[in-house]
Image (cartoon, rainbow, N blue to C red; front, side, top):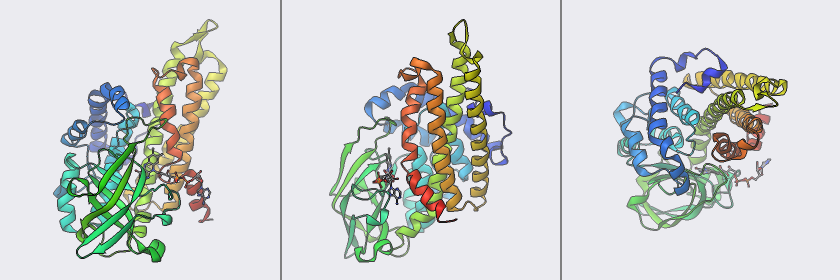
Length: 389
Ligand SMILES: Cc1cc2nc3c(=O)[nH]c(=O)nc-3n(C[C@H](O)[C@H](O)[C@H](O)COP(=O)(O)OP(=O)(O)OC[C@H]3O[C@@H](n4cnc5c(N)ncnc54)[C@H](O)[C@@H]3O)c2cc1C
């Protein structure tokens, strides 16, 4: 398969050279050969099966940016970007390994004790543990300070009670980072992140695998914690009350990662549509021969190019440790908005076939919508950018 990014004709950034490029090729092959042929089945079952996670682990596609001593591949965010781009380019967007790799595992790496890292990271790297992060609750989404899930200390255990919703990988996850209040009086300063290993506890229940309009192959779910007892050693960080700060520190990478999916899907939509309009005939000529088609695609290619250059710059800065939260918010908001626009215009150029599920652009249209909502809505991104003015 050719890389749909080539449609833009841009030079590869330095961070995507050599082994990152090889990882991209390997990940594309894996997604095309192992995941894509079964993707309809995964959408029907509303989850990718556990076996595919284990295969991804065996292929080195889990925890690529974790240090080798903890079972990872010792890479950087560039490696995670290569994997997420491959997922987007092949069109298997519901496979939730991006969240597992570049959101869940980094919390353990950055805030975990040596013992926690040794215990959990190698199993996340094989796929034996599947990761999720449970922030959102029925009454607390954008306003995370409103989280009600309570973790009460009881000797050398915490007793966790509360409910979470919209949790990616929610049916399969057996390692969940739970955003809790250890001291509800203190608001944000009373927030802590606690790991729940679901196979080890009682009182944990999975709720519905939610019926969504897109990303059907992901098991986005409700989770319930009814006096779930976990050892106090499952707290992330040395002391309670650091959860909010930890979330704020990690959110830029989560937001950039949504930008990764966006730019990859933009490139795929363009590549597929250019092929389609060259084939499809109307009024005795190919659809690409209409000036409107050329103008539309010229606009989209220009915007995609701007998006890719911006994205590449964000990754370069992030690898150097210099991506600030405001720029990460810009990347999340602008690239996901652009994704919505490009996919919509590309669907239009497919005519009625674009509305048919057998054409990939239809699924891309459904999958794109949530990108403007999760990881902090685009309105919240603008709020954060606005504060920098
Ligand atoms: C498919 C999917 C997967 C998800 N995965 C996860 C996951 O793995 N883990 C997790 O914890 N969460 C997850 N989420 C939850 C997601 O992050 C939240 O849905 C999102 O943060 C918005 O919260 P909300 O749905 O409660 O909307 P609300 O906060 O109720 O917002 C409703 C509307 O009000 C707007 N709004 C809110 N506050 C303001 C403000 N101050 N100014 C202007 N406008 C505002 C919002 O932008 C939005 O348009 C997922 C959601 C979906 C749909």
